[in-house]
Image (cartoon, rainbow, N blue to C red; front, side, top):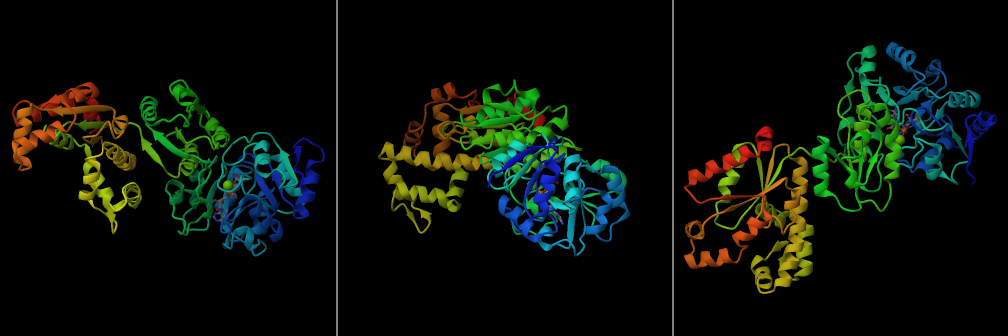
Length: 537
Ligand code: TXA
Ligand code: MG
């Protein structure tokens, strides 16, 4: 099928589009929010074509677009007074209302729900097409299901060239994100999707509005939700998206630590300079939320490139229209959001130096310690991928899902290449788990690892510190703690990196060379000096 593009000011456009619609065909139409893929909303066969063209799940109902507010009555019943007031105030415009459906609306349009979503778009040419066709049009956003929405005719052409007969080109969409959806079928009005009409503006008319949990949180695939569309991964480029919260400076530091050459940054125009090392793409001005709405989808589509690994995205704070940006970005990110302001301290040092004192002091000021040794042992119990990788490299070392550490030890301690292979496997798994925990952390974190640098963990830290101690003190401590002879203690210490190595590689060295309480004081003084911890703790 050849896909024709007609400009909105083309004289034939209204009759051409209306004729196709009446004949049960699909037409891509401009609206003030995003482009829609429309069909006669009362014709089940035509509506079925929308689901097919988009690859849309069958349980996801469509919005019925009408040309005049009074047409609501044709398709909805039990319409509350507030719906009329909302229509009077915001229509034509980016508001969709969910109301009880009349029988005339086919089940495939509502996905079998007893309700229907209606909206009168603020786009003259589209309303003319609807009037001329004489039917309401069902129209989802014209993107392929799950992909970023279409805000230009070119976007639609990209997704549907050869599959639909006509695209009406009305230029770039003014608002840029899909309509606000308000459900008016419950006791209290409920926001199902934030958009260009803000919660605050609607509340002035309808009073308190419940915010549906799908707006801000991730929803399980099998959960029954009010707006079925909200539970799917949405608006998403192929790559993974991570929202990075915090100041520009903190975000630049965070991204610097995590950035790979095939990564990109999606940021505010004001931040382009700060992120210049990270292939930044701006989607609008932080100071002007309208520009963020208008630019978001075009930017997400540009980042939908198989060569991109991860996109670090900046998201505006606050309420009002920013809510719509937050919602779309959160969905694009699969709700993956990190706090760049989180302070991460790397703590390392040889055995017997007294690292524990420093860790305890860190906890005492409100920090959280991630003990990488404990994480590793935990993973050996739960991480089947890790165990599989070990078994794959060292056949016979995993028996019934349990690592035989003696057997593995015998292999790796006599063979440096085998040890390097084991480290490559375990370091990767531990780092992935640390990253996962860092994403969830809300208090300053100390990563405690003897192999802080070898395991690639130092790169995640704002500051690294090593604890050192005089050799005799270490030997004495180890003989008591581990009940071994001084000779054995010496052997253990010599098997590790020398003190000089820590001095070369760490930002700070804390010498544990006095009494226990001296050292404890030293630790607290150190945290004081790193005032960032004191502020956050
Ligand atoms: O701005 C817009 O609303 C655009 C333009 C084309 O008008 N349309 C749009 O449609 O965004 P779509 O299909 O991409 O999103 C419609 C959303 C889905 O999340 C769907 O689950 C929800 O509306 N929805 C539709 N009917 C519903 C109903 N009866 N009850 C609850 N949610 C409904
Ligand atoms: Mg959509």
